[in-house]
Image 1 (cartoon, rainbow, N blue to C red):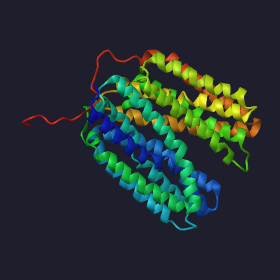
Image 2 (image 1 turned 90 degrees about the vertical axis):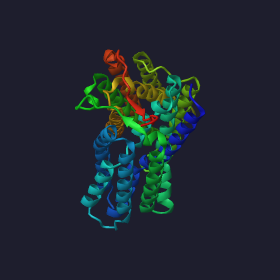
Image 3 (image 1 turned 90 degrees about the horizontal axis):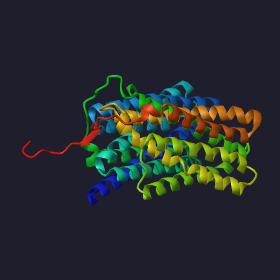
Image 4 (image 1 turned 30 degrees about the horizontal axis):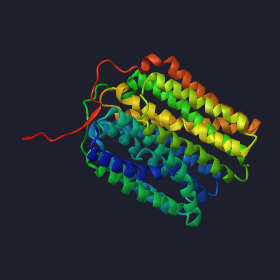
Length: 404
């Protein structure tokens, strides 16, 4: 049974990690807006944002691997301070700064961005011992993470509008470093102890982990395609603001799905459960094609489709502890985040081309197809997702031994 102390500790971890990740969900759009203002070129700004995204995909697993070897405290403190300093440097750059400088700074920010989300997911099983409570916690964590991605960009753009893009970056830097240091100061994070690393190749040495990465790559394509498709369906090329309420409804659906899953005690993280939830995810997004004739019907269907997002991620996260090689759990979560981000970038690019040639409805279909591909991958590679027969401790909270 989970103690009140465990619940209080988990609550503090949730709050600090959510605040730390809120700026992280905004950095792409924040760096883009700032670069556009300094260079006067959206093309250059797009390259800056792309450099950040690529570097983030590289740096996340590297930082997480360090966590698995050295613990969370040193890595989180060092990366958060470095990222905040670079953000403040970027915010202080004057108009007319070379695009090459902006690209270099953005790439450096991506490389040293603190892996707070991966650390949060890695530490949860050591804070909450009850398996059912852990599944519920993963469901809530996935839903809360969705809120940061829904609320973060509008907040950053609004702050940039009323103040400046540089000011928005500065605020992001302060919030990120303060919240990350608060997370790292929590006893559960400070005393989280990595196990002996069994595989020099890292987390991707496990076939099951590679399957989850491929699944989330396809799920990421769904996410990226859906955002572009919704914007094209309910907005115009000159006014994309109309899509914001609909994307918020999509995020609301994910939040509701995560909360409902948590209230019922979570879902067993089994291959069958993952395949079933991916089927629901894909079907819900395919049905959006039939709901485009009415804004009310389309909005309601977005809530329904989004309701499968947090449960899908929660089931996926719940499988990592059994599939990742010993001592690589944080790196494993980082690879999943990278796969999702890369997939979203691919989905956005593909949907953008489809929208330009055929409009928003075929792009919506792409999102549904991506969900079907994710389900097919999980179904075909289902044997790799079976937990190993021999249990292993993924990571633990170091407890003081009397007399030691």
